[in-house]
Each structure stands twice: as C-alpha cells, then as structure tokens.
Image (cartoon, rainbow, N blue to C red):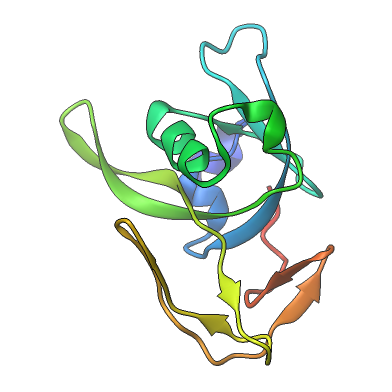
Length: 139
C-alpha cells in the first residue's frame, strides 16, 4: 500500500508528476474555502496546484502579476528538491514553457536563471498543446 493511495489529495503534489515534467495550459486561478493560498487549475486536468509565493512569482515573471491574465498560458510543472520546515522534500515548481524550433523540437532557452534543456525528440500533440512527454500523467 502506498501513502498516496491511502491518503489521496484533492490538490497536485510532486509525486503526482511521477518523476516527469508536464507542460500544461492554465485554465484559471481561484481562491477556495479552507485554502489560504490561491489554487491554479489546468485545462484537461482534475487537480489544481496550490500556488505558493515562489510559483506565483515565477508565473508573474512570465505573464504579469494579474492572475486573471494567466488563463490560456502554458507552463511546465516539475518536481524539484526544496527546503520545507528545515527538511529537504520534493515540491512542485513552475518553469517557463518550452520554446520550439520550426521542426517542432525543443530549443534551449536561457532566461534569468531558468534553463530549458534542448531535446531532439519529435513533438507529440496532445490536448491542444505540444509536449514531448506522454500525456498519461493523471492529476
């Protein structure tokens, strides 16, 4: 029995990404009762991401500080090692969307501390967005 099976969460956790990155399209950002932070939902996904200050600042850097303007914008979700209450744990982090060349392959982009590595795998179209990863990460 796994912890995630016994204690399922209504919100996205790093373990939901299954060690992979997911390029997603923001659907909306809302305030929910009982949650002290905003929740970001994605097109075609059930779980939302509780947005901490770090992830808010990353999306705001890309698309501006008004979350109403983020709908329809692409981001990448990835698990990273973070410090939480003095311990190293996996946390979900936002990264800039991958830029693609004319062949549909990911190009390397360097943007103020964000590096996106290049890949030569062909792009697979899924759910209206381009993604080099299989779209079978259910969250």
